[in-house]
Image (cartoon, rainbow, N blue to C red; front, side, top):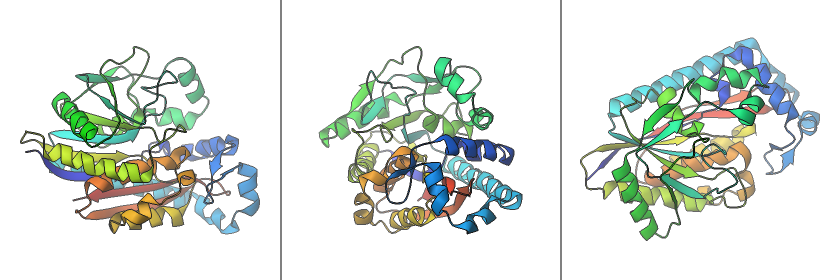
Length: 332
């Protein structure tokens, strides 16, 4: 039977894949964003946040602090990359969210699997490229999301097909996709392990695609936790001697940094506190903060394992408290 050898949780924000000189440009995006999810689960404007912001946040915006946070983020990515290499996985199951990259308004599944032999990362084109190019910070971070030319990512078809059967028998309704439309690309949540965690191109992946961003068919925290448990069952029942790692890609709080909330989530993950996790209000799992569901899925697969928090970095980039909560962890 297959063996699960490692779990990883990692943020993948452009903020940590572009140098600190670009953090001010990321701040410009925050200032233009009318839907900044605050700790009350409601959307605020930038000006509304600024009116009530703690003046002490100014101390988080110095060159010294930004450089220290950036360098530490790189160290954490390096630690996770070494863990992944040392675990020697034959297959990596990547739990991530598709942000209208592979899917579009023609169909957005709550839970999707790709069953073709390969899926392609393609450079952004057309309207998506034009929107991205409005912000130099996003352009600078593209290397961590999409390559300069189409790049194939191998799929472990046998495991994917096996998981599709096991999950269906466990009453998960799946969307299976085996043909990639010509104008669509593998999402950045799924390319991150290769481009930033140095997963070899020869190591196949199984992308488990969650719809965390687009209401209303966003699976609950409870559903994602149970999905993780079902994934473990499926992996361990696969008739293979291969070593399998899981990666939860994304998170934590976006685009308002919520350190208390982030630490509550990390604490619940470490303590295997299913009740705390599954009762996170749905309204708190919206926008980029919804990527926390990817971590909860991995936690469900490691219900009897141990979680090590490598670090948590509150990535403030404006006096209104906007930015991202950058977190890095491993399950054993």
